[in-house]
Image (tube, rainbow, N blue to C red; front, side, top):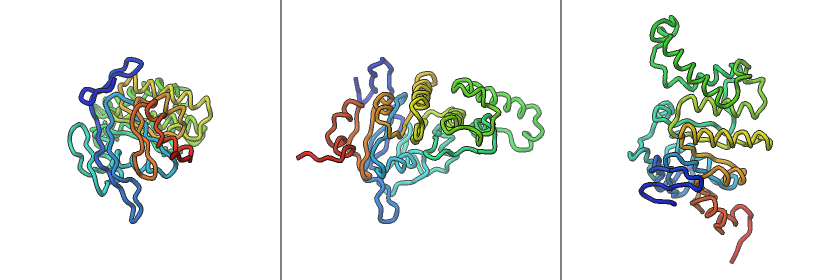
Length: 272
């Protein structure tokens, strides 16, 4: 059951904790266009929180606000109980927030292993000269980071392609490599922007399994945007629904599924 102070327990017995991030009355404009209008919701520790809505609803803009890429003109973003000031991307990453992108953003000419290793950059403390010599502290750091990456590669079952250039991979595997790179940062909050877009049924099933495993085994809090409503309803603990930049629904999958405003927005029908 949901408890505003302590969190809630899911139907499968998982305990969801307190608020990790809170969006308070967020409004985002691009010139005269209002992408997000006065939206508030929270993300709780250990949950899978979905953000859904028709095309143009403002979902990706909201994810960009959460990740610090956009700074809203109105409203506040609170993270772990403190109001967050505008941050640069590397500062957001250091706070423990990682993300994947709607359009795959990998280094095509590099191997899978090297791409995933880039997710460890914020965990590297030695400077470029120490790394060039690769002795002592730099060697130990490289070894420790490589061990983390290899565990993630095993976890996501991409061992067979670890040395393959990303450009040679099919779309579904590229999506999995991008997830691996985000996980290499060891995020507390993982943002997934349409992780299953363009996938076939089998690839969606695999990605759904990995998302659930990441949440369960790593305890990672996840916020995701996804258009496949079957996937959203199966994976999510709570769902916030946007339409034309406004919030029209927020609750459990069952609550959202039966919300008339959500039904109207998705089906394009009106009820008097």
